[in-house]
Image (cartoon, rainbow, N blue to C red; front, side, top):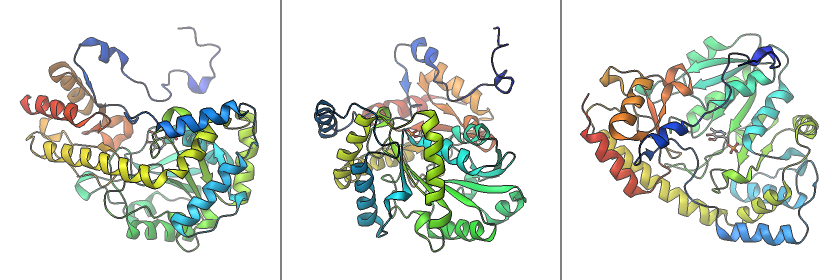
Length: 383
Ligand SMILES: Cc1ncc(COP(=O)(O)O)c(C=O)c1O
């Protein structure tokens, strides 16, 4: 391939996530547990509401900061759910939380600044940090410690160049949900070292114990937290590409200016859909939170009965991250055998950083009957 017109930094480097489409067509009966996208179509009331609004003229550029009605609704929902009043100049609507995180990094990093990332981590973080000229510094967490975020490991990773940390709660891929103790630890370290916390709070309807507590709401944190939220997972709206960021005004203004150069504004019709979605949030949280919890709990029980797997039981999201160490295979080898011998497609843990090696990710984004069939097939395998 002639790549002489490609920027040097991207040569010989794979960027982004790739779906193994060949694997899907290799066998007629592949069960695909690799998709981090909900299997439900967006609620028809949201689609119908957006369609009506599009017909009424919401087909133009909008306010770059976001549809004022949506921003007002975000502030109202935050006040109702978190008890905190946020002024509208602390909200920016973004075309997805992927873009929101990239904008955050571009807004806060100087060249060479370091960002702490707890591993295993959502694959895109490293790219988002590096695109902004920063350096990703990995802080490991391990299944045998319940993916605990440990103070000694954070302190060992901090240098004078550390600028921020990315904290994803609950976590993709491990399914770990962190409580008050971890939030307090991160908040105190962020304050001690004057760091920004980029809080990726996009799976907040999927906490299995207790409920969502934003790190932003801890004392002293509002002025140093960028809260990233998205309609993708909570509202089953991945394809609409809409989310929002809550952050101090100076960061919002900077992100808005950068966003102007990248895409000017978030699609108007998606923002209208988001507005309708917010009005249904209690119902959707209840319905889908419970549904995914049941699937994860069923899957966890089945995995625990399979002798060659180990599992740190998830406390949130719709993912499970079993260990394959007992098989003696690497993540990639195990996933290849699972595909060849059981026709099940999953994601190798190594995609989520070095600490993910020895694991694979199951996304419970298929119905329970399909999950049952997948675990029946896994149970028949011998290693
Ligand atoms: C932890 C995490 N953050 C961000 C994203 C991206 O979400 P969005 O659709 O809002 O870009 C994902 C998607 O899988 C994710 O798992």
